[in-house]
Image 1: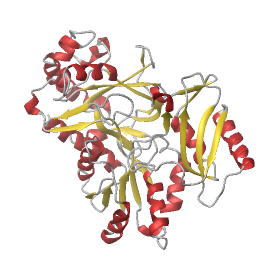
Image 2: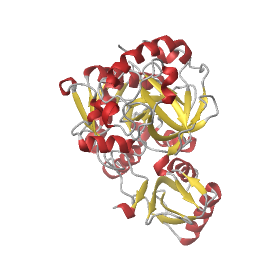
Image 3: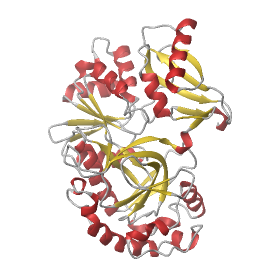
Length: 436
């Protein structure tokens, strides 16, 4: 079945019949899945006749998929379709474990592009825009798949990828490009290249007025966005939230508010559970928990009750001012990125907000863990603005401010601007040296 036109504007209850119809087709796919019928730790699954019974099924997690794919390469026994149906292969980065092969059929790819297009359109991208796409096209799903989502908005898309930043700057100027699709950390790299190779060009004069971003923590922080606007004159939008194993991009902001709309209500089922437990949390405004997802329409590698590892807060389930009925939520952090410092939980997104609130800092930071927990202080490296030099008094002032904001001890390293490595893909903010 194709995506339901305008599903993001419907309230979830209005899509109930459509979702049940998709589940009937999906049940047949799952019944043919060797993973869920023979190799899953709780196999065989007894698939409910209606979606009401989904909560009785076992969870699936990333480790299940890793083990299965290692045993049944290249796609795992959860492929659930013939290898001939696979029309595209992507691969995860493997930064948190074994790299995974992701299979898409033509049907899966089309659904993904349409849902991603909903997110990018809601964030303000449209036919009057020319957007340069600066994500890695080499195997990573964020390249081609997000590109096709951008095209769904009607915008003209320039497939630039990563590398060649000087050429990118010339291309933006020559084509009059007004929008960029990139990671939140990439504008800092772009600004460095401007200062080094194009000193007469101010970032604002480059003409980028819209930024469509995702893939890194901290984007929802107002101070970060204000800094981008002050430097570039661009409005930054979180338009690209997804889980590669499930859907590359299924949520994004609209131009009326700051929370993320869940744009895949017609093709996916959402749940919240207590992190580390199997207790279901009510799906209602104000609830917090780990996001659990089930495909209602997926030919290749369909997943049932997949634990994403993302902690979210559901903020609203009524109709938004933008007219969309899609539920809204905020991402609190990743379960594997939570750092406990003397009983206080810290996530990179929270640290990013604290760093961005310091006017002496440029927003670049790294949390560098030298050993396994426990931790009595948060080991944090930060950069000063490009015209400032570190000194002990300034370091202590900033350290105390960050400690007060985060309500935990901070072991601060203050660095000159440009010290930390810049990347054109996802920037790793949390580095576990003891794993390397």
